[in-house]
Amino acid sequence: MARSKEKDPKEIADWLHWLPKAELHLHLEGSITPATLVELSQRNDAVPLTYDQAANVYDYHDFPSFLMSFKAVTERLVKPVDYELITYNMVRDLALQGVRHAEAYLSIGILYRFARLDVDEVMEAAERGRRRAESEFGTSLLWIIDAVRHFGVEECRKTFLKAAELRKHMPSVVGIGIGGDEARGPAHEFREVYAEAKENGLHLTCHAGETTGAESVWSAINIGAERIGHALTAASDEDLMDVLARKQIPLELNVTSNLKTKSCASLLEHPVRRYFEEGLMVTLNSDDPPFFGANLLEEYILVQREFDFTPEQMREFAANSIEASFLKPERKLQLLGEVEQYGF
Ligand SMILES: [Zn+2]
Image (cartoon, rainbow, N blue to C red; front, side, top):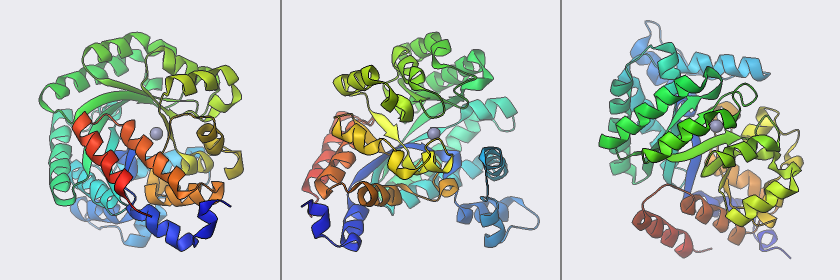
């Protein structure tokens, strides 16, 4: 009998709560909760939103209306200092879920596109939020600078060059990535800008295989992505599964996100269990938690319960998340030690 069956679900959920873990696929702008939205509104609006009004902004029924909700939330970031607030609140909320380290996407691609705010001022504010939260809660945070693939290669290059410039005086900027519409911005078009980013000392991530087929994951690997975001459709390609297992390329899975965006039709069709059993390097993540209704802790609880993973297997997910992070070796070892020593 699986060990998980011997324990009461509440007991397992409590254990998962303080299991030391890392979040590797989380968008800063998508981490704004209704409570934080109220705080932003109190700062910036003549008539601030009530909590219920703020919560209603997150209501959507299909993908276009999800994008409208996302836009309505992020439009409330009107001053650079707002990024300090959302960063601080994000790290605080992660610490409350037993998250010891996070790597968050910050979309400079969007900032450039809409030219509403100065990128340097935004990054300085976000850094203030990071430093304050790290010292208060002990949860570390690194930045991955995100470009929007369907805005084209040149906008992406501009974003990655900015990331390289920032990295020189902000060591917390560690990597780059592309998100957006995979079909309108296939990864292979970004080979050159990924090579440049690598030369500039940045780690490479790539959203792939979320809304398009396995070929998108192949392209991400071929342009040098060190971690793949979603990789949902890799399951349809045996050769790809072999490569992912052999090379141990970390996959940033987002189960609830895939269900809510309907990229995956039902929970039991999600390949998380199969990936784990076939020896792929899988991590669990929350993507845009308040929009999808599950934070990282809830993601761990859901996956454990629905796929009947044992606590030892859940510990492996947590260890994978630290192993696959872009942390320096000393901090990785420290956190891996915490995972190992966390008793059951
Ligand atoms: Zn994402």
